[in-house]
Image (cartoon, rainbow, N blue to C red; front, side, top):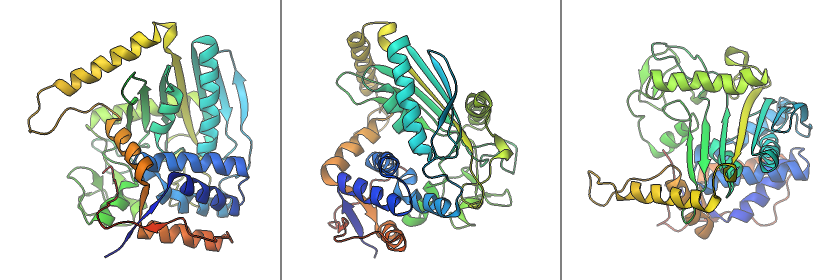
Length: 368
């Protein structure tokens, strides 16, 4: 039986920062990149956490991510900006874009930043929450390589194109909708394999376009995702393609190579970030208190099963984050081994491993 490992938030961030530095990233970019990944792990979104580091490093080694490039503002107004990411680290570019969007919103009430020529930006929810802070509404989206089929299709059509809408409350954690337009994220296939579980019906096609529930039916990168709600999810993914790639004059659909299958090619994706200053509409405290009222109304709704209650978007992630921040982040043995192997191959010096064997009664918090 494989063991789980526990690591503190700070120790994991420090390890990942040094790991990215070992592969050529400067300190500031490595730190921003690592903090974003660890924040994702903290929220229990393991499909977008450190399990993805190997792919990022494979692309760094292949030269298909320009590690220390500087993004450039192409066009700007008091409320908007268009950024060319120059094929840099997607999470680093996104952090810059979020800061810019919030600054514009503080000054003008709204800030909208469009980004092209970026790379994978991780979990949308972390950017929605950073955009929102404690005084704004944050909206973000990204396009991605084609992986989602059309409702009647059997091939890849467009990306899963995830988005987040985040809103601060007063006494409750941020309301944060963080979803893609596929039934589930590609990275969650690893979790189904790790847990020995079959996919839910209607979530994936195999590489031949045939429905499957077997997470081992083919290589992870060859699965074809189904849109959630069929025409509804597919309609949203089309609109997110427009809001991201078409607005930014970036690559879209079949113009985007696979982040996993085409390691030797850039993965030029586009993002959208929007911050709305709440006080431009109403008193901030009154607004967040009314969000509390909405949350409490949802919690009070009758439910079908005793002991359950209606949850609001982001509530589970907030609870997992609080638990992980207190007890440490749990990683599987496979992930820890992969991280240490990459550190050794990159020549990173490790005096003491930050990963400790977790107690038997601790399990990995997994959002599948």
